[in-house]
Length: 387
Image (cartoon, rainbow, N blue to C red):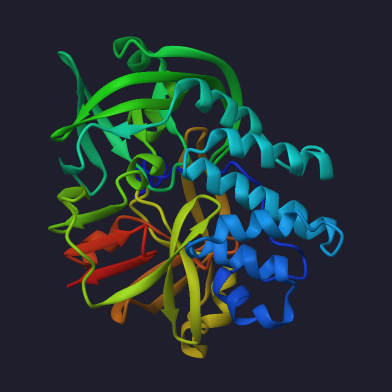
């Protein structure tokens, strides 16, 4: 267990928590309380839920700065900055990031620099619209450039790609002249950005992959010298993990949504979905870079009395690019959640000591053990699961 905890947990966090102090962090709670929130906050919820036209409506609302609070405008600009990064609209991302900085210096973190670097590199694209990739453990694929084969981790919890120094050299990665500090699960990491012009993955070629260079030692901590980020999964529009995560299907290769569906939303580390706990629905973050699933304190409010009664003190070890960290935690037994109406029971599950971005849990590749097929449609913003 200690090795799994150490090498397979990675999540890049590019923006600080954005929800105002008087606004719930969970997007579904925000939606429930929309009537009591400002118009700007309601539009932000539309953006997080991926509703059609949400970016345009939010941009129009920001033109009326007189009737909006500076706090709401700051969050709106930052949420748009994240949305434009996902959509690879880097010029727009620079514009809204700088608008957030004008309201509060430092609020955009490294996002403006990141957008500028990606703008120089060009958009990430696949060479085909129907992509099939063989996976091991729901995470690991083989990538190739020429005669160089690279073991690759596909991580829905990573905002940007990562590559080790040694692998960057083998792939003839081109330096972009930008150096960034990026937060991870364990510590902040500083490195230069590079562009990998082409990489064969499955039956297709991934073009213009931008990645942060990390040391070979840091790559050893996570067990992979190359990580493909969420951006590579979102670009084809739809993805499916088939046959309990042994195959990843992107674009037209992915089957349509099944009948057992739940809602998707954009969270600050990538993508999340609505899960039903004993006492309510909360958003949970999908992180295929981790084998483990754990709770955050935000989940306490929706656990049953019987589930809460199983609580005991615990120490957990987590790891990532920065190595391992031991921290106090809690352990619960026989916790059950429902994903798209389908039950998923945990004989034991850890709870972290602190919330991160408001989500109730981080869900790792265990979801692929529980469900034979998991389909995510980023245009409909829905997810389906099949037993």
